[in-house]
Image (tube, rainbow, N blue to C red; front, top):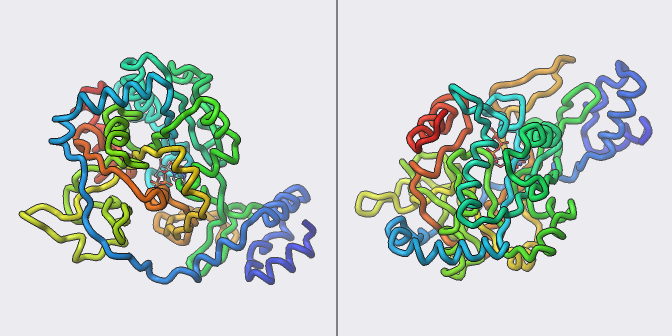
Length: 405
Ligand code: UTP
């Protein structure tokens, strides 16, 4: 793209600030910036105007397979799950494309060392959890790892350097998700560098379309994989391809399953699995009306099932339902950018990132099993350095579960 063309386009889009430092740039930097502008999806910004307060449908609580039922039927569920795993019908997808900005760690979150007396990265801890299952089944399921331009190179290198933590290398497949521009609250796209347009990963909802774009769906087809267990990098107690969860979802004839925990209090910042207009739906904590959030019956929260970012999707049903587009959400985030010629790294949200969310896929599936897990054994999210959902709280929970740090 030429300078004249970029200037014309940006004027049309109201984004002329992207050329503010053009005169200061070297030839190669100018070329880089013009190329970036050419590859920017300006249409995504329309989501700011389209953002009326989200209207929820009729919300009702959802029934779950409770801890008690799971304890009663554990063996039955587990047998079905183990058989499917032994037949190679299940794969796992790790969502590791996020920037993890709250943690304040400048590498991919999975590389964060959660150990105390010895090194133990989040990636390694999660791989150790995987070995609990492969020891049972004697078979290594394919592990698809979604990265983004910000995490890809470091993540692949880290797995290489650590010899894939002992997992067969040919069972691990990396793929990159797409990015979207990041802007201030007025919709003006930031510059990340004077010669670079600010872009951020476009949310974890793009995992299936990105898997298809990467061509890795061919592996899914070739291996006749029927179920994909999608999980986040945050939770160090995450049970991956848990046979009991798989068996329960299959026996309950659901198109997808979600591992949920009982919320500790009404204010806990987790999405809640419930039904919306009769269909399973996840309502984010900031979207839940106060009245429903606090509603209790016999002293217990009525909307009590928080999601843990561990979902099981039926591949056939994914293909059948996901031809429609996922909506973009505006995530208010602290975004590093150029301001008055200097790069600033704010500690408070200063603009929007545009994200599609995996929770919207659950809604599209139309059927979802809420599968309750014991939070002290399976839920240790690492979002912040200290306090709630932090490195501190996750370390304490790991130790409680016998992991030597
Ligand atoms: P979060 O919602 O915690 O976002 O991601 P984040 O970007 O990692 O962290 P903050 O908000 O900046 O602190 C939940 C999961 O979704 C993945 C993350 O890697 C994590 O496993 N994710 C998030 C992606 O894979 N891609 C994205 O674009 C966003």
